Length: 382
Image (cartoon, rainbow, N blue to C red):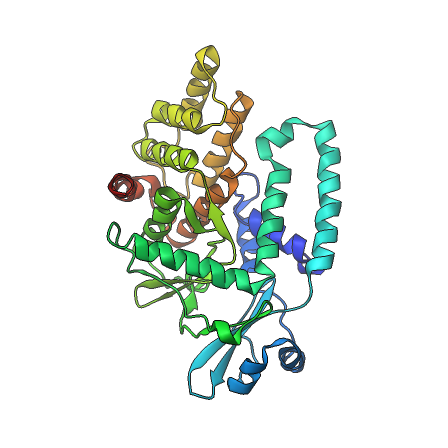
């Protein structure tokens, strides 16, 4: 039903697959199917589209491709192919021209949200629906141009190389992209044999230690660099031989130095269950903070909010829910946060959701302590 409503509906569904703060967990798990269980193009149509849309050089170099897709997501579809030199490649193609309908749906929803905000203006500060819609819009438009994916990969690879001496990033890999065989709607890349993290979680074939390593890798980029994979859901990662291959890098997240340092301080305090320090860190990273009696009331209510969090497992208390409630509490007390906050919070929601599916008995914040300390040392060494 969601897919029939169009690409915007799918993207909203993918976003809210994370929102265990107000959707039942069973609904969120159902929505995670939107990461990879999308309708596929029939083989005859795919072959015809490839002939019409692929670069001439690819048609010359491509010896064969499999009719059945390796994966079919909301925007693109991937097939295994073989070049004339024998190399196996992944051929990704944008399935159709989504842009016109997608933008019409965005405009319609934006008008509707603005009407709602006239009736309930507080919603803008608490949930920032227009900001979230803007993030979905920009991220989807980036996905619709596969040249963005190649550019995003190049950026992350360059940052990996530049920081290799400060931080061990050997577990992070990227498939080679054949830029000369690609264009805006067709991309050819190295075929990486393996399953996505989403599939491995579904099959219960990935361990908790591996997910902690993923947090360590992603966390370095988010907290120490401030530039990171902006759509790091489990369908965009392949795990093979102890390494994570980062896929679909068209959406790059960026966060200001003030925000990334503030969030790191917040999570370091949260990992130690020091809730007054959490309150101070959140207030310090706000564009407009609060003071006096208002701050003391906020500190007291935040401590009360986290009274069931100390030592709790991810199944007992959701980090995602607590984070959303924390931001809401700060806004309700007068804090104002930068618009760029959502992408980094979203990536942390993905991490929380993966751990919940893998090891619901984990005390995630306690296990994050050594990595948070490592991020702090990495920042100091730069």
